[in-house]
Image (cartoon, rainbow, N blue to C red; front, side, top):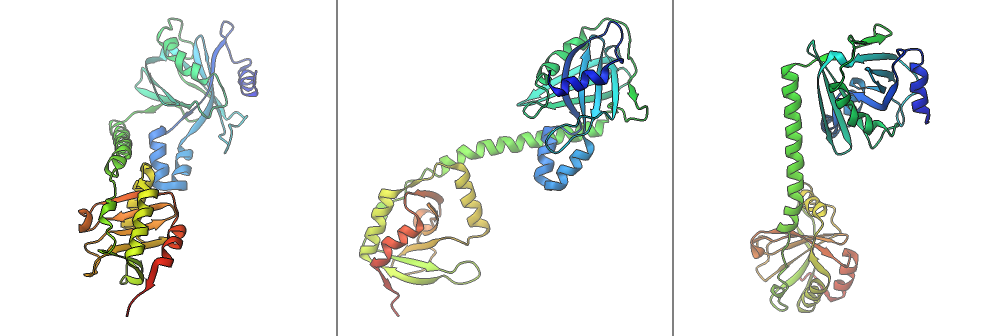
Length: 338
C-alpha cells in the first residue's frame, strides 16, 4: 500500500458505516478542464497558470458501496499534499445522472444531483499519485447507476461545515461559453494538424537548377535588408555560378520538416533579419524584383522566388552550412566593379 492510499484509510477511519467498505480510490481535481487550461496558459502564460490554480481544488477520493468521500488537500508544485482540509461525502442516491468522458490521458465524471447542482470530477492519469485513479473513473459511473440501497449520505456533508461545496449551479451561459471555447480549441487543433502535412506538400518544389546558367547570370552576395537598401558585397560570374549550381544539385532538397517550413515563413515575413548569408542571381539588368533571393541560416535556405519562380516561397534543406557555402564560393568571387 502506497502512502497516498494509507493516508486515505487513516483519514476515513471511524467515518464509515458498519457495513461500508472502500472499493475504489483515486486522486482527482475540480475546476477548469484540459482544453481551457491549455488555452489559458498559451494566452496568459504564468498568469494563466496561477489563475487556473486558484480555481482548482484537489482531493483524495474514495468510493464505497454507498457513497463517494472526497478528502480535500493541498496541491504542491510537484506532488499532492498529505494533509486534510475537509471531507465531502456524496451519497449515490442523491445523484440522478452521471456523465463520463475521456480525452487522451484526461478523465472526467459529471455528477448531476436531483436538486439541479452539478459536480465535475477530473483527473490527469499521466501525472497522478494514485495508480488506481483510472479504475476509479472507469467503474464509478456504473456503481452509481446500479445503486439501489438506502440514502446514506444523501446530502453532501462537509467537515468542517464551512467548506465550499464541490457542487455548483450549472448556468446556461457558462455551459455555452465553455462549449464555445472547446469547439474553438478543436478547430485550432484541426487546423494545426492539417497545416503540417499541407506545408510539406506545398514545399515539395524541386529548385530549377538548370536555370542557373553560367555565363547568363551572376551571383551576388548581398548585405542589408529591411529599413535600408540592399548592398552588394561581391559578385561571382561564370565559375561562381557553376559552383553554386553544383552545390545546389548535390546538397539541397525540399525540406520535409513541417515545423521548420512554417517557422521559416513566419520569420521571413515578420523579421527578415539575422540570416547567416543572403545571395541572389541576377543578369545585367540587376534589380531584385525578378530574381530569386536566398536567405540562409545554418543548414536551411529560404528561397524568395520573385517573378523568376512565379513568386513562390519555399524552404530547402542543405547538407552544407552557410559558412561552408561562403567558404566554397569566396575564392571564385570578385570585388564589386566600380
